[in-house]
Image (cartoon, rainbow, N blue to C red; front, top):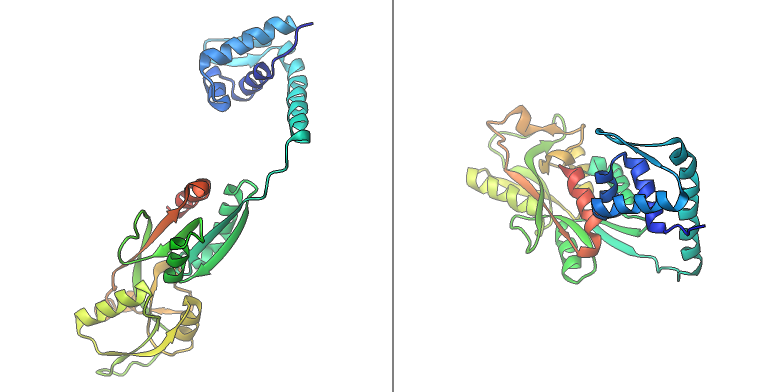
Length: 279
């Protein structure tokens, strides 16, 4: 009896799944001619025609259908044999930093996407403001970060842009001619810089009513009526009154907020999945 080369079996299993030598070759990372040769050797070794060739596609013969479960069983047995003696791999942990402004209402969905892309690796998530996240990146303490910035960080990829809007609690009284009370984040926040620059261009008087260290605190303060805030589209909660939408003449959009992605080579699958999801 002739021995069966595992490479032949893998090519045969790929043909069974794909119904095409071309697609099977892509699955096993070999050339079409190599996959065809593997099939010929396998059929010669078992003494049976396993695949019926037609002008449109490939289909398993009755012998091929009967042989397929055994081929898959042999491949599983080989994988299990390798695993039995292979040293256990040390768990890989990817450290991710995500801006609080980045689609916060869809964070659970994003975490599911990242979990699926992690391939069994462990994940550590830091949700925070962009300046500390960029410092983590600079100190090589993160494998992937999503940050906001007015100037693109070196090596960053533009991930998403969102319009900014002025928001307040419904019914907030803003006496005409009085300085606008503001609720903003700290001095390192790009949204703060954009908002203050917009007010300066318009010559509108304002004062900082409350400074916050995180966007969640700022949103809570705005909802509580402390003053007017500036938020990107995906960070605006339903309870807020969007002044830019209601009265665009008095409250024009301050501009757009850019999100940038920085990732290291080891986190490429995560970066690709995140980029596709964020479109």
